[in-house]
Image (cartoon, helix red, strand yellow):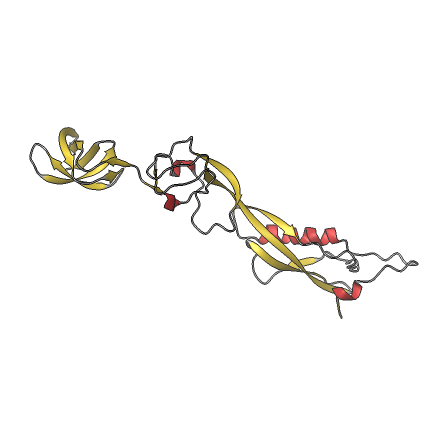
Length: 226
């Protein structure tokens, strides 16, 4: 017969030395269950809500078990812990799982249009359970990018906060490189639009006056393939 936890919330009799299941052993089996079943690659902390002090459960003659209907994930949930011994018991233990990751934050305020350098950003371990946007974890993903809006120091940055640095601007002179059969030909041109690295833009060849499509390769430089 299943004996519920409430039946054991009693004071110890002075003449008896009953053996009770320690609360610590219950916490440990809960943590072990989460560690083996959680579906995340992030670091995380587990906060186990303490059981009330006067809750006395008979010592289980076999290893106690933990289970839950759903896999553990960030946030609050309940884990069922039970004993399948002669005196069966079952309780629910409330836990909170907090995931942490090293995310990119600004070390100083930046104005819209500013270019990010290694001095502007760093990695910091943060609780990411409440971050809705796609936070960033690799510094090289933001270095040399332009800030899309004003940002204050300490901001956890996301992909939406940056735009690719414009290496070519409309109306500026650019150097056009054309590779044909291993022969590199260079000529001057005028950019018809702004462009970031890898972007295809329209360029006017100053020699032929033709408008061509070229790929931005560096500051003031584009290339065309034959």
